[in-house]
Length: 136
Image (cartoon, rainbow, N blue to C red; front, side):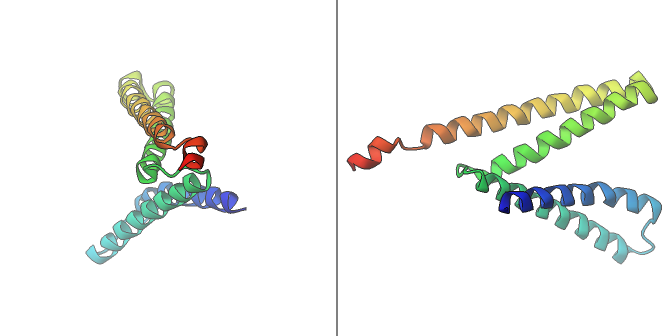
């Protein structure tokens, strides 16, 4: 049940992160205080997304450098989304605008995927075998 709640929170905060810039485009801030409030809200949304992903990873049984794993997951999925946006731009707008986005974000996504793999591999290497715990 907790993993379902964590997944729901991840989806909620992801949608809130996407809705923030759209809302600002439709209703631009009228004062500096409103602009600062919008920026603080976006930072809080990103923080809540981070802690929701971190909670989900911990509920999955991972304990090694969970913060780094959470950032790797967030950046990976955002880069996948940006790559898809770039592909849409290739067909809808122009190749000159979409191709650099696809190239850049697919590279970022691959780097984050490898980063997460390296963290998971290090986690499995640092786990003590059950026989070593019994002998001690």
